[in-house]
Amino acid sequence: MGTFSVVRMSQLEGALRLDAEYYKLEYLSLLNHLKKVGCVPVKNIAFPIKRKFRPQKGEYFDYIEISEVDLTTGEFNTSKIIGEEAPDRAQWVVNKDDILVSMVRPIRNAVIIIRERKENLVCSSGFAILHSQDIQANYLFLYFKMPFIARLLDRHTTATEYPAVSWNDVLNIPIYSGSEEFQIGISSMVDKSFTLLKQSRSFYSQAENLLLEELGLKDFKPKNEKTYTANLSDAFSVHRIDAEYFQPAFKEVEEYIIKNYSAKPIKKLNFVEVTTGQYSEKYVDKSEGMPYIRGTDLKNGTINTDNLVYISPEDQIESKKAKEGDVVVTRVGTIGLAARIPKECEGGTISDNLIRLRFDQQKLNSYYLALFLGSPLGVNLMIKNSRGSVQQRLNQETLKEVIVPLLPLSTQKEIASLVQQSHEARRKAKELLEAAKRAVEIAIEQSEENAMSFLKFFERVF
Image (cartoon, rainbow, N blue to C red; front, top):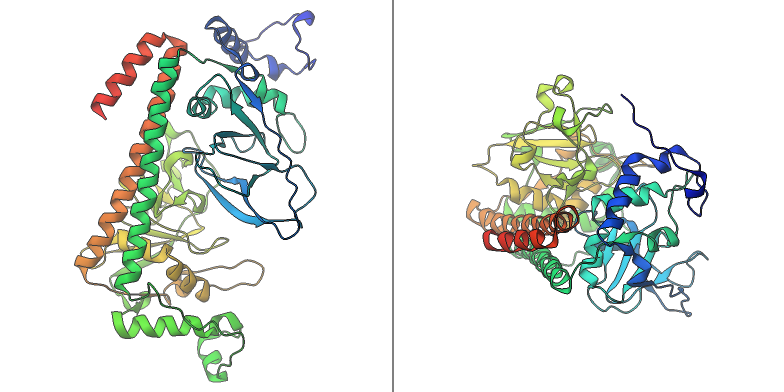
């Protein structure tokens, strides 16, 4: 049976919205409840920041792009550096404790808190920037990551070619601030989460450094020559005539690890099975399906399960199913992303933009292999063997040409231990953020007293 809501003409909001979607019962009920628990517009407790980006000659800034934000944790990459030659559009300079909220609606929940002071940092014009006034900055950051806030912002999305919300939409979001004690409790959990994320990055960096040290490549600087020659017979033997393939830097590194660390092409590791994945664009609800693992789900040497899509078990091809310990790499687009399949993805399906490596883990450690292939060294070796002009591609045969150094299993396990510690710290960090969001929900749905009890209970068992 369908549901409907009736809105009087006098109750139409200032935007004079007439579309039925805007007045869905779901939205009206939520807004009514938020009003009852004392929510106020964000603009009452935080103010907008519009520091226009105006670089001087020769001045350069790190640039935060919306697409480079981790939608779960709020971590971000400065994907590029821009200066005076940047396009003439609104771009904002950001400072410590600024909260960045995505106004580009296809990318939901892209929220950032700038936790450290950093000179020359700017963000995309797709962000609204807020600075807290009468509220904890960590609390404001977390609040904008609440699922119901994403829905309310979606409600205001303009139905144009480029869906977005406005600064006013962000500033008028109703916020439950609660008591100072409650804000401090939530802020503390956010702090602990970011501490764990920092530890996670540190463990992963240690693993990469240990890998390079064990390979004797920590300070290795191959000669990246601008001009070089190759024999025609060499070109014929590999069926390649592109200059990049014959770059002496690649050859020097390959010869070095083959000579010193028993590196072998994957095709000569006869215990490694290589296969591509399965194409599918027919997705189902999580409760009905199995994970469908795509290139966009690969991060930090593992599978980011936050945005997985799912396909029906009936559509799965048995030979394309994943097992814990499989290693997958991207084969098209961004070459070089690599990940180990975790237990929670076992039984899922590998997408066709990935290549899967399955092997006896008594002979090769899966954490180690995923780290190596995803390291700058492994990425360069895969790029070297990729083909294509407009878009680089790997296939099973070209991936098999990539060499892998076989360090002693004891060393592989030492490296793997650091990677596992990195994954565990990240898992705990996400748990803390989810628990903090649940506490806010409890405060709004039940009472702040119950929310504080939940926070204390979670701290005891965490």
